[in-house]
Length: 249
Image 1: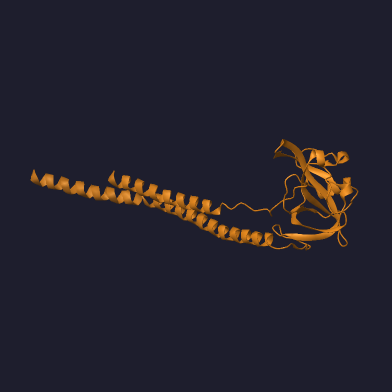
Image 2: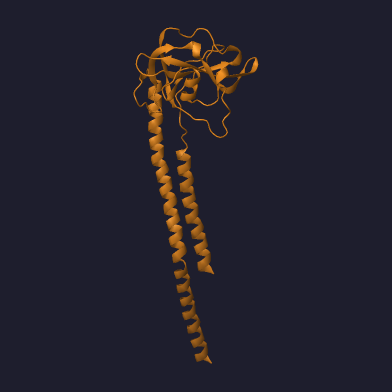
C-alpha cells in the first residue's frame, strides 16, 4: 500500500514537471510575437522622434525667414522661403479667388482673395495673392501703381478637382488657384506656374488683408512618439499578465 502511494506520488510529480515543461514551451511563440510587436512599436516611436527633430529644424527655419527680409526669387524656391519679388502690379487685371466669409464688427462679410498679375523685367508675370477683400470693395485704393517689391511665399499651382466649384472667367471669379487658367482669362498666356502669397501686417478696415505668417506645418510628432511607446508598454504588460495566468493554471 505504501509502495503504491509512493509510486503514484512520484508519477504525479513527474507529470507536473512535464506539464510545466510543456507550459513554458507554449509561451515561446506568444512571447516571440509579443516581443516582435513591442520592438516594432518602439521603432515607430523612435522614428517619430527623428521626425520631431526634422520638423523643429523646419520651424526654426521658418521663424528665421519671417524675422528677416525676403530673399530674391530663385528658379526653384523652397516651400517655406520668404521671397522678395520686384515688379509692377497690373491692378486693371485683378481677379477674385475663393469664397471666404470674415467676421467683422458689422457682422459676417463675404469676400475672397484679390489676385493681381505682377509684371517683371525678367521672367514671366507672377500672379500675386494680395489678401482678402470684401465683395463690396474688390478693388481697394492705396495699392502701388508703379514698381514695387512684394514680400511673400510661393504656393504651387493647383488644378480643378472632381468636386471643385466651377470657375467664372467672364466675371473673373475663380475657385481654383490655377495660374494657367487665370492667366488665360486675363490674356496672359504663360504666367509663372505658381502664386506669390503676399505677406504683411493687417490693419482693421484696410483692404486687402494679406497673410501675416509663412505656412507652418503641423508638429504632432512628440504626441505620436508617446503613443507608440505607450502601446509598446501595454503589449509588454499584457503579455506579462497573460504569462502569469498561464503559469498558475
